[in-house]
Length: 196
Image 1: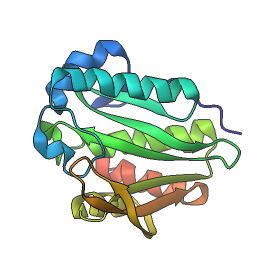
Image 2: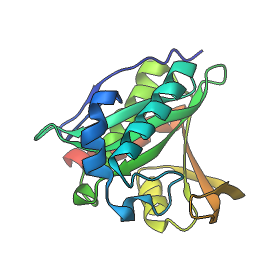
Image 3: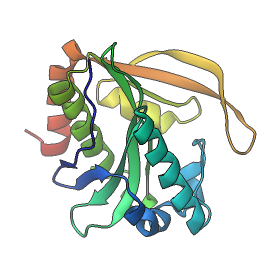
C-alpha cells in the first residue's frame, strides 16, 4: 500500500516542493507562454489562471488522488514549472508522473531529466511503487522521444482519450517503467545527468 505524503525533492538543478498558494505569482510568470499549453488539458493565460491551477491541484491533493509539485530552479529559487503524481493506485502500488510543464527558457536543458530522476527515485526507492506510468499527446513526438530515452516502455495508445480546451480530441500514448526496470533506468538517468 502506497503511503503518499507531501515531500520536497532536491537535485543539482531543481527543487520540487509541494505546490502551494504562495507559488501563484511564480507559476504565472513561468506559465504565461502559449507554446507550453499546446498539448495540455489546461492553460495559464492570465494571473488568475495560476491561482485556479493551484487551488484545483490542492483540492486533488486533499482528496488523496494527486500530489502536485512546484518546480523551482536551484540557482535562483524561481518557479520554472510544475509536475505531479496522479492516477494514484495505492492498492496496486502504482501511479502516474504527469501534468508536467516547464517554462520555455529551460526546455532542452537538464531540468526535465532531473525532475524525472528525482520523482522516479522517490517512487521506486521510498514509496515502493511497482509501476510508474507516463502519458503524452500522440502529436508530442519530443515528449515521446524523451520518455523512451530515459527507459520508458511504450505500451499503447488510448484513442479519443481527452478533449483539449480548444476542442481537439487527443489520443494519448502511454509508457511505463516497472520496479524491476528501475535499476537500469536509474543508471541511464545518472549517466545523462552526471556522465558517470
